[in-house]
Image 1 (cartoon, rainbow, N blue to C red):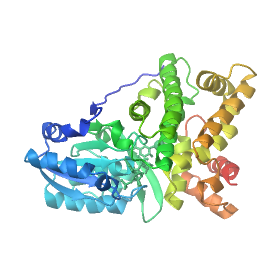
Image 2 (image 1 turned 30 degrees about the vertical axis):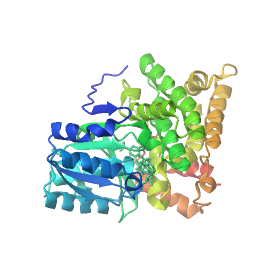
Image 3 (image 1 turned 45 degrees about the vertical axis):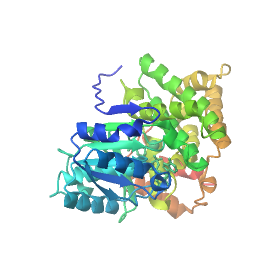
Length: 393
Ligand code: NZQ
Ligand code: ZN
């Protein structure tokens, strides 16, 4: 096990009616002028936004609204938010929504605390975030795990590059998590969320590091749980038990707990981000469209590890390590298919690409061959082309 440090400062308020505590918890975290960030309207339609605003008003907390954040959120929208938040004099940014809204809120918080800095510089690694405003979250979808993660993902609208910024200042001050708020999710978003939750642990599981048993068992238990309750949630969106399990696993899967003591890979996430950045595809769906191709290309590096995954997550008990590896990959894909998730470019809805376009994706991923993301298997330009081609049907 490698050495690690782990600090999750986010206060979690979980359960039915949790959002009723929003004014109290916002005030405790210094919110007197709250800048509320939300998406395309689901929180207005459900009445959640109105209820939150009423609570804030009753507690004499001032607020301003900033709506219209789209899935695969844009840097330009976050910059607009920074200007608005500064004009309002915000002291706390409240995200009401999912990963896209939360990540935009994180960017606004960084920008509002560093008005002389172009926030794109943080994402391009030109500057480090040294100060930020507190971010609060009222979560409406179990998926990205941004409510407790140290990451924020934005797409630069000028280049089409989607990338994550990792800093401990990305961890929200608080997260209000009421599973009932996810009952209104469309099937597609629920399924994509289940895939994303699984992939945050799968992208941490494949490693050449040995002797990390507790983290491994936590990861496998989390995956088995999401597989079980994901199915139940797809059958009944109002199944409180299933929605609770998904919501809590969504946070634990991406707050770092399932990779303690090892370096995480995240190569599949990076392959997938290019598909969202370039074609606007839904995050969870881009992951399932890429993972099987990645896995088939790399499992021979460590068949014992893939076999361990197959045995402990999918109960595959017989066969050589190679046979069990392939069975684990197939069972994962069959599960995703059962939930209606795509396994290739055509099913993802982006169509079959020509060679020039595949090379463009690999160039975007590797910065023209200068970088090779991934830890379990370095994804150099040639390998990335091979994997994209395997998914290109
Ligand atoms: O915009 P509205 O109208 O609110 O609708 C949203 C949106 O269309 C809808 N939705 C959310 N909650 C709902 C609901 N509809 C009905 N009822 C509800 N209760 O769902 C759609 C998707 O929302 P989005 O916020 O995009 O979902 P998700 O949480 O999956 O976030 C995806 C984004 O997070 C990034 C992804 O790359 C993507 O940009 N990620 C962020 C991470 C992080 N910060 O740690 C890690 C992840 O790996 C991921 O990359
Ligand atoms: Zn993800």
